[in-house]
Length: 251
Image (cartoon, rainbow, N blue to C red):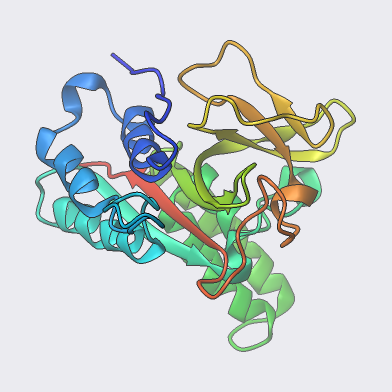
């Protein structure tokens, strides 16, 4: 049985809430191991608040990065069917969908095809630059790799994205897919664990009645903008970061 996604309990627990939501999205309730949950909370809340309280300033990007290694340890050891990878910089951009709905950015390919889909396209990107094949050969290879990836990995990977909050702090949301705003503009589907986050009705719209999927629709132009505004990817000394998490086919 699938769980509904959860909201954070405090102003500073968006990181563990979003990591837990990644598990709730990808796995049935009876599949989630308590030690995996414990690993999330053990790594979280490592930053001191301005009053000296431990955890009072939430979770650092480095602590979140450590969970990539933790999840991969579980997956590679056969203890839990999970895999994770950090995307950074331009690879985190949602971008516009390509011709015929093509997956033209690493983030889109990761969410739609899984991590194997990213690797296939990194190879063909070099080929398109003339390193290994002609443009025609690269295009055929790209299509072939995308088709193979679609058949060999489970769809439904998610992204844990670091964005600006309404209070202009770093904040984490769960990227679960892509769509379009009513005017046709490309958009990112996310679940924001902060229940009272504002929506402007234009670039940020509320999604109703999808408690296990998403609660916000964010314009790609906003998400990718690099500006210090709510729901834009944080682009500071850590660069833009999205942790992609997927369910492995077998443990």
